[in-house]
Image 1 (tube, rainbow, N blue to C red):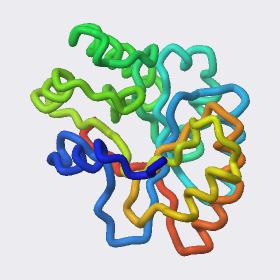
Image 2: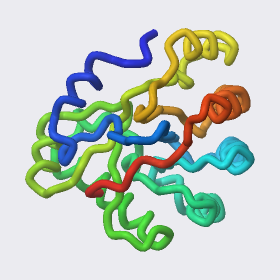
Image 3: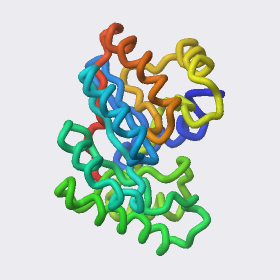
Length: 213
């Protein structure tokens, strides 16, 4: 269980205008991201913890969950967090033809726009599965794929203490974009320990820098 996969390291070698994994920053900053929300139970708990520790994050939302929880999306924006696009139905994009991939993204952008005031948003493919045809489409149209450089593995069926031990053994570094999820209790347990530790270590906890969504 490695927090830095070979795939994300290789994708990080691509121009940042095409794929972004980690940020260049002169400050000691971690960029927090949460996938797969909004979730009626766990997203509020994540937001409570972020607020308590003065942290902001980027929430990559699944489009077909947005209309069911408009109050959560409004709260995400009101508390200073950023919205990202995590597709409409969370498919593996490589299993779809390119027009269907584009439709998944466009439909989610449209659902996010009333909350963000933006026409497009940073896109993160489900499971990080980025087919070549979609990558080329983004390069042609001037959009950036927003991935990560550090995987917390909070989606693994492991107890929080086990995951904490792995994170403490190989912690994120300043500039890392941290992958987490706001659809499970394990993430809430991890954040309760990690956020105060990271702040005590002098790290700022911020959303991803705005790129060319």
